Image (tube, rainbow, N blue to C red; front, side, top):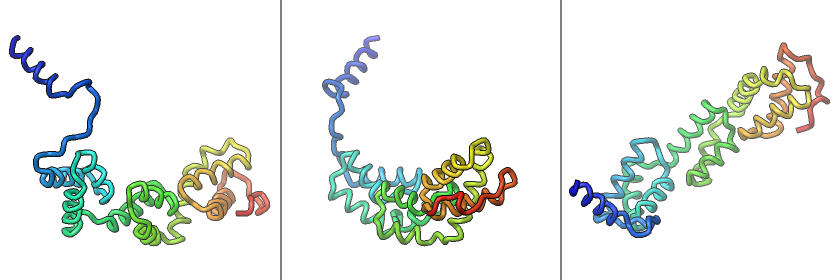
Length: 195
């Protein structure tokens, strides 16, 4: 019993005063700690240099140490924002049907440079975008069956817009899918807004 009291008291002393969060203490060997943090995070999933820099800052690693370790990881190819961006674009476009605008926003939030983003999304071909948009609309078509024409068009175009498709492509694809659909009558061009 006395041993438990003593360990609880020691635990209370080590937790800091007031229970509030304070800035993390720099580790005894900041460079080793930085390497360990980066390797652990990269083992879980690919990360951008910016994401790793933020994680190191949260751990109290000094900026100069962080830059040195991140530079070395970049040199040996463990950090590669270009490869990250290309893989991200392929994965999110194939899996979620996202278009360049949405993909660019996601990559920007992860700290990828604008030029790298442009190069990665430029690999998407117009026919890939059209095919992905058609697939998204076709999957959603049945769920909109009970809506009147205008609401159905707005719902489908809105879904594509949230995924980053341009208004012109969205309207064109929705029009084509609705005209090809067996559960709807064919619509004339003037049933769709210009876009």
